[in-house]
Length: 523
Image (cartoon, rainbow, N blue to C red; front, side, top):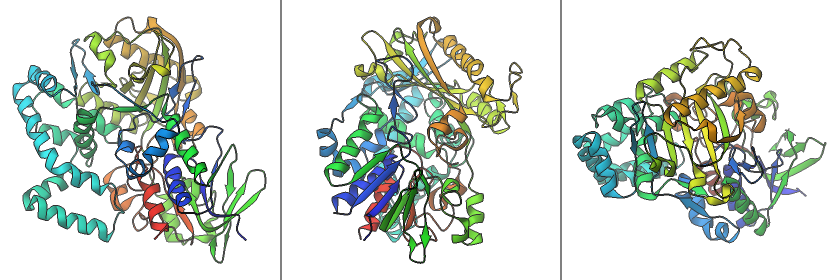
C-alpha cells in the first residue's frame, strides 16, 4: 500500500494550495520542505535584531486575498492566526527635486495629487478607473483559468460579447503592451507615469519590454481600491495558517528534509527519496513546487523524458537577479518630500522611467547598475507587531542586478564576486535612499543584505537570484510558461506534476497554479 496519495515537494504557497484542496477531499497528503522555515519565497525571519520581523522575499499579499484559495479557506486561515494589515496610502514614487507622487485610497486626495502634476492626468485617471471597472473582472479571471483551455476560450468569447470588438482588443493590447507605451498613451506628466512603470519591473519587465503593462494596469487601481496588504506579523504567519489548516484536514507537513530524487517506474512517478535515504511512496501524484531546470534532471533522471522536452527545459530563461536588503530602523524613513510618505506601503525610488530602463539594461549586460531601482516596503508602519515600539523595519528590493557581475556601470567597484560586492553595493543603495531622505542612514540600527547567491541558497527556486523564478517575457508567459505545450502542470512522466512561479500564471502570491492543479486532480 502507498504511504500517501500525493506528495508535494516544497512548501511554497502554491504547493500548500494543492495540499489544502487534496486534504479537504480526503486524500492522504504529505508536504516535504527542505528548509526549517516553510513558505518558500514567502517566509519571515528575525534577520537583523531581536523583535524585528522581516519578510525575507515576498511581502505583498494583495493577489492572494483575491485568490480562489483564499475565498475557499479564509475562515480556516483567520481561525489559525492569520490577519491583514493595510494602510490608506498604498504606493508612492519620489524624485530628486524633493517632490513625490503619492497614491491615496481616498478618491478626492488621489485626484488632487494627480492634478497637482497635471490636471489632464487627473481626468485621464478617472477615465482609466471607469474603463477598469469594465475590464478588470475579465482580466483577473484570465489569471485564474488554465492556460490554454476550453474554459479560457469560453471566457474570451463571453468577454468579446460583453465588451464588444473594440474594447475586447483594447484588453488584448494591454496584455501585450510595454509599460512605457501604456503610460505614454494615457498620461502626460513624467511623475504620474512614474507611479505606474516601476510595477512592470517587479515581474522582469523593463519599461520598454512588451507585456509589461498588464501588472501596472492591475496593481495600481486594485491597490487604490483595496489597499496594499500585508500579513500581520509577517507573511510567514499566512504560511503557518495554511499549514495548520492542512494538518487540521488530515494532511502532513515535514520541515528540514530535502527530496534528493523522485523515482520513476513503468506506472510513472511513484514517490520521493529524502536526504536521509527514506523512501516514501505516492499512489496518485508527486507535485513538484520546483523550477523546471531544478526538477528535470536533478530530481528526475533525464532518461525518463524525450530529448525534445529536455531541450525546452535547457532553454528555460531566468530573469535579472534581485538583491534584498532588510533594515532595522530607529524611527521612520525621513523622506524629504514629506513625513506622510513614511505611511506609504511601498515607495518606488526609480526615479523616472528612463532611469529604470537604464538600470534594467545595465543589469542585463552584466553590470552593476549605477543607480538601481528600489522598492522600499514600509510594512511596520501598517503592522506594529513587526518591530519594537518606536522602531521600524524596512524591506528593500533592489531591481535589478546581474547574477554574475562582470563590471560596475559606475566604474567604482572593481570586484566581480558577490562575496566582496555585497556590502559595498549595499552601501550604494543606502546612499541612494539617503539622497531622497536626508538623515536616513543615521536611523539604521542593523542591516542584512541578501545578494543573488544568498537568495538562491535560501530558496533554490530563486536561481541566480531571480526572484520571479523565470523571465516573464511574452515568449515565456501565458501558454508558453514554463514552455510551449506544457503549461497545464503535467509532465511527460505520468503522476508527476509541476507548479509554482515558473508555471502559469507566474510570480506573485496568487496560489493559482497550486489551486488549478488541485482542482484538476480532483476531477
